Length: 60
Image (cartoon, rainbow, N blue to C red; front, side):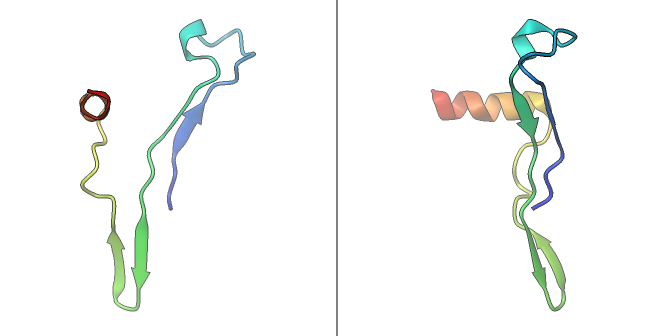
């Protein structure tokens, strides 16, 4: 997997209170083959509005 992300320490007073102690990470699952690679997660949302809409649908 390739996992870029950001994490906020719960004790970091420079971070807004509502963000302290959380992390966000976008992962890609990549299959490596003899002929190259295939991104298995390429159909997942990437933009924040798309992720929020997708999550809202899961929680509905």
